[in-house]
Image (cartoon, rainbow, N blue to C red; front, side, top):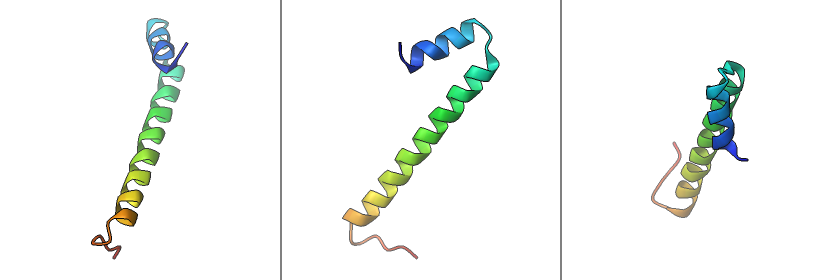
Length: 51
């Protein structure tokens, strides 16, 4: 059973705490992957300069 199933079950059971926890985990994962993507792009493209 995965993350999506947990979200659906939490929504069906009105488990607000679990929904908020899953939302925070999702947002954290997106922020980390975006940061890795931005740093990787700046590292691979020499025309990008950090100011």
